[in-house]
Image 1 (tube, one colour):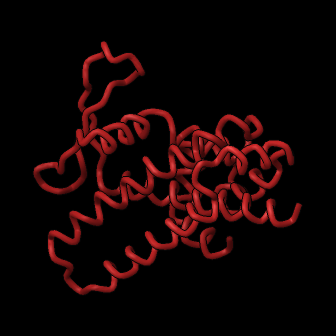
Image 2 (image 1 turned 180 degrees about the vertical axis):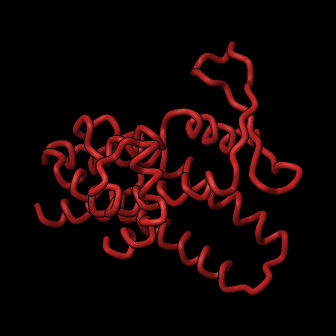
Length: 199
């Protein structure tokens, strides 16, 4: 988790200020998430594995494949605009739809109240990120005119009678959301797989 902790230190102040995560946990968020997931009772871990339609090792393989794609895009000096557009779609799908449904919603229900991992799961599944996830899943998003971020439309609640509301997110904010989502996903899946093999 050390490499993930180092990569996430740039967001430590956001984790402290926005998510109210203890400074010690915010400075090593991957390790903190892994610790909190590791503290889940054995029966919960068994239940998560048993109820997973897609095995967690397959989900981890998808994250590794995604990281390889991201590394490849970043290795190109000047990627074509079509590559960047494909990256945006893939990155947002993996970070919010795939991980949201395959990781965050499941763990949020079972983690101890007040722990760093639970605060991360709550942040990643509540508005405005919940609305963003829905907009990505239902193709209700677009680039801002100056490409400094994205605009998206979603309902604030769960009722289909609610009107669609316009949101926007800057690229800097989106970078934080995506980084946190991938960090939490990796830390959680790795820990859950280690727990399974150690039982």
